[in-house]
Length: 330
Ligand code: TXA
Ligand code: MG
Image (tube, rainbow, N blue to C red):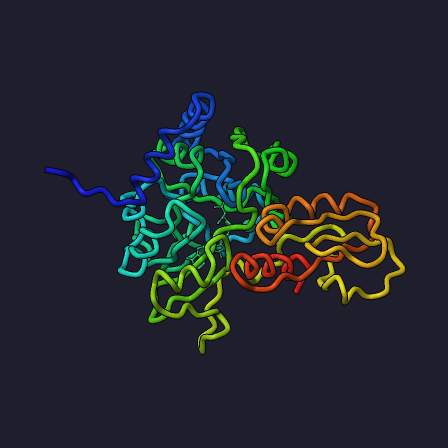
């Protein structure tokens, strides 16, 4: 007789088994901290997260406090198995299709929350977002704590998200007892958030899994918040995000305005004229991966303004453009 195991959980188990002894020891230590109500910063495939026991309202309160985050902005629950997800949300047909196709991976699914999830974790909403990160240290940390881990990006609220451990330390070093260093993250932009609680699937936040990929698996159109009569938005998208300390202006290499100030450039194309600092990317994937690091780097140059090339919206371009627009304060 064979016991059925869902493919997503099986993939997660294989990932955890591949972890180095050093990272396994850190995940164990982190698991104990989480169980005791403490905070641990950890890598995922998207950005670094600042995690705590999602089921403990006091632990969750300390995340909001450490980040300086508005408390009505709900958190994503990170799980290491589909079984764990089932403890916190009602998984429906669409969610099952998405989970099977994309977990572990950069996709957060909004579903009806079970009562066990404190209102503080879900910002008072009847729903909760769950995701299984595609990162061995993250999965091991969750598994060793035995708990779903609530985790926003590990930056001070409003700042660009951290994609390496050094940036986490500089933002959060004095507020978190353990930062697990798993190197640079692979995607660089946060997970896609999709709501499958209603009649239509709605893309609340574009991310590592594209709208096209979601539609291919669901075999239906995925709506954007503005396509809906009732504006359904990810609560977090109301707030200013990713703001560099120097103004950011979106343009194309051809449409750069005449500029008297010292300006920096980031994009795939080379700009006309001479920037005082610049970051060039090979393609959109690299642009996304390096975006937040580039913002933090260029704000430290002596530029008075940063010009950033607007990418097209295909694939990862939609998420990239979304983060750029929010960093520019749109
Ligand atoms: O890639 C990621 O998702 C990273 C890593 C650490 O996993 N986490 C992350 O968390 O970006 P955060 O807190 O920065 O963003 C969570 C997003 C917010 O836009 C929030 O409003 C939305 O998910 N969200 C969470 N729960 C929700 C719910 N029940 N309904 C609608 N949106 C929700
Ligand atoms: Mg964030």
